Image (cartoon, rainbow, N blue to C red; front, side, top):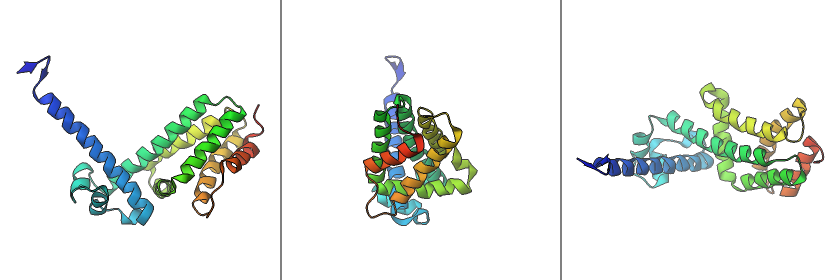
Length: 195
């Protein structure tokens, strides 16, 4: 039976699909919390499901295995960060305001230290598993694109990409992470004084 061009089951199917996507997102966020708290070794279907407040079998239902869950978590968090960086790069004009915007983004990322810690745990997995590298490459490409708004020197751009990861990673080890002003000073040193 058709009503308005669709079948009676379409709204139910769409509702289930939306609920399924919401559950997957909850499980991915729970995975990041578990990784931040217990490391990758602490991730299991049961611990992630419990962290998400879902039935113990939820993670196994939505993901084929732990590797699938970790891959999805890495991909989502790296793609979110890459997209934020890409948007910042698109808006960058080589001036001081754009440099300040990147320093503010770095401060914001550091403030979410549990998320950042989980990202680096997953980032290291990509070093061992080439299948996980595309999301990390998208992040590095977005940082490089920002750098190209300030310089065409490929060495400076490589330094910027490495610096971003190094400074963010080191911020996890400090009692007092760098301020926005400090991040801005570091960026000026690498990219030069803005025009």
